[in-house]
Length: 418
Image 1 (tube, rainbow, N blue to C red):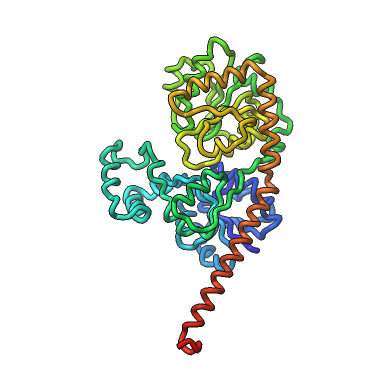
Image 2: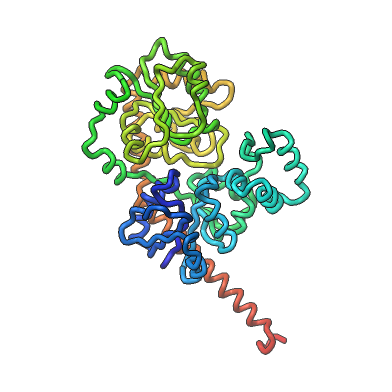
């Protein structure tokens, strides 16, 4: 089966490009893959797997009839997914839904395009909500809206999906609740073992600790990924400020996004905080391997599954997460879960303190986390699940097409049916 695989491709600065980097080699062992992306500036690092820039070569889209299946990776970042989304609307296919809130994807169309998209998703009778949102918000800038989860913008995406792949039961429930009547397949996120080995070859962790002034007896607490309000970094800073007199630590923040300098200063943690900004995959993996405890909070959820958390678990790191959405589905023995209400900071202080003072607990939790993802999230296992979903969808689509053709033939003039 030949499959057109639409996804942001490396070296683009998005976790979904990294996801495809690690899935594609395994999936290509089972399926004849052709990779399609918008705006490929550097050839992606795939040996023997063709990749095409459909913006530079739009005739590639004309030839989509030649493929047995179309697979679209859809996320919430318009920079990497908007052009792929536009193709999906014209050529339906299997959708890998990485986020169940696509507000910012729609916002990437600009104010006028966003209003049109709102009407197509929610109907003209809800236009009053658009004017209310624009009136209340800063400079009427739709990108500044602080409650995107209120408007998931899922209807059009799901209307073009022949089947949907999600990474959690939570996301599957959201898709069904949004009115999707087709097949929804839960396929776990995957770990990146080849990338981990490659990035840690010849690596000396002592040099990296020395570079950032991390003492031998200091605990390194890490927050990784794109820094936005839903990652709850202010709560992490407040909790660490409470522990400062009892625990010797450094906070490592790896990723770009919102500027946290004011919050860091307010909590008196300038000397304890290391901020790297965006780093490449090699540096990201080395920082992750260096970290003693990973804090990966998320509230409210946009329906996403955290690839960073899955990789942290693959490294055997003890992780503290929010007891919400997909994170709640993880086995209790693999991660430490905390609440997201008024008790968030207090429970975070307690969780960090317990892990900081109990190295056996850190080792035990990290070992169980690693065992869990090494069973459930290997690239070979995930590629097999993708293959199964694609074959099943093609079979069902072919059956429906054949049935409709038979029904049309039965009622056409000259068919004997009058």
